[in-house]
Image 1 (cartoon, helix red, strand yellow):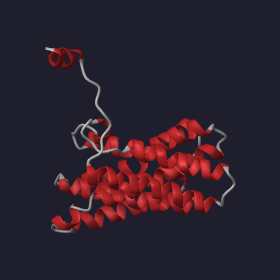
Image 2 (spheres, one colour):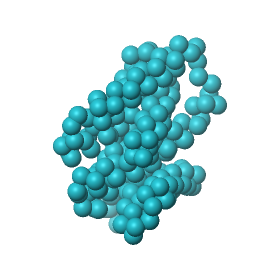
Image 3 (cartoon, one colour):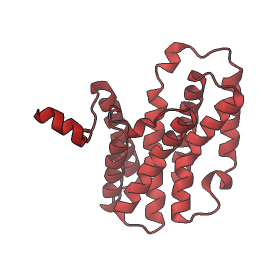
Length: 210
């Protein structure tokens, strides 16, 4: 089941990467690179932390082929309608949720604690986007105080999945619940611009007092 979820996560992540690269007017090499990074970087870090070999996208080489074909098709299109780009948050949220749940699941299977599994779920679900933003020469949205909740949604969704699985519910129920929480929280954060409070510097605090 986790392999199916992983495939869906790769498709969602690659789709987000393709749209992001096209927004930055990249050629095929750029589109494929960004899509590849976003689809595989988070899972690669997870596999390295868990000492899982070969890496998941090397073991399942069809994943890389899918990303390549998707990037090639997108690159030959003269332009992507702006109406499609407005839905960029959809594959982003789906990819984050799918990768988070599968990352936490693989971590638990490897014998980690639930807390470590939740952290690795967040790494799997969010760090592809972090590295993708760096490649696109912008501050990763995950680290911007103005970004609506992202890693927080992943963390909460991972815990829903892990706790439901711990209670003995069927795995499919735990997966769907964890994924749904991730995605719904992310869309809610985007809709109402819910952000974590940013830490204030000493100079800002002094200014407020004066």
